[in-house]
Amino acid sequence: MKKGSSKSKQNPEPQTPRRRKYDEEFKRQAVAMIRNGQPVRSVAQALGISENVLHRWKREAIDSQSNSELEVEKLRQRLKQVEMERDILKKALSMCVRRRPACSVGDETVPPGKESEPGS
Image (tube, rainbow, N blue to C red):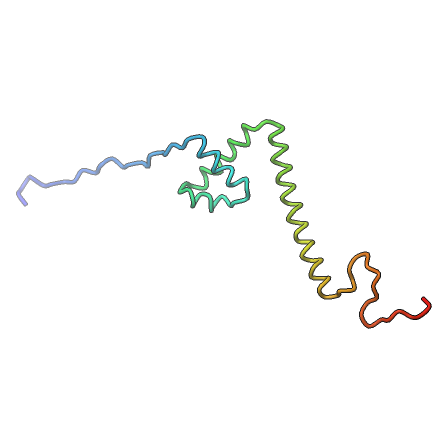
C-alpha cells in the first residue's frame, strides 16, 4: 500500500428496514384468518409478517367495529365454545355406551347379568 493513501472504508449509513405497506384487503384477510381460529403465530409465518403487526391489525379492526358487529363476534366465539363442549360430551357419552351398553340414558333394558324375574 502506498503511504498516505490508506483506503478507509466508509461505513455506509445503517440501513433501517423499510416498512412494508399492505393494502386494506390483505389486512382484512389476515385478521379474518385469526378470527376463524388460526393461531396468530401460524398466520404470521404463513404471510411472512411479524406477530406484532397482526396483533395491531386485529386491535384496529376491533376498535373500528360497531356495537352490533362486536356482539356478533362475541356470539360467534360463544357458539364455537359451545360446539366444542358438545363434541367433548358426545365423545364421552359414546365411550360410556361402549363400556356399558345397557346404561344408555332413558333405556329400560336390564343390565347384563340380571335377568328380569317373572311376574315383575
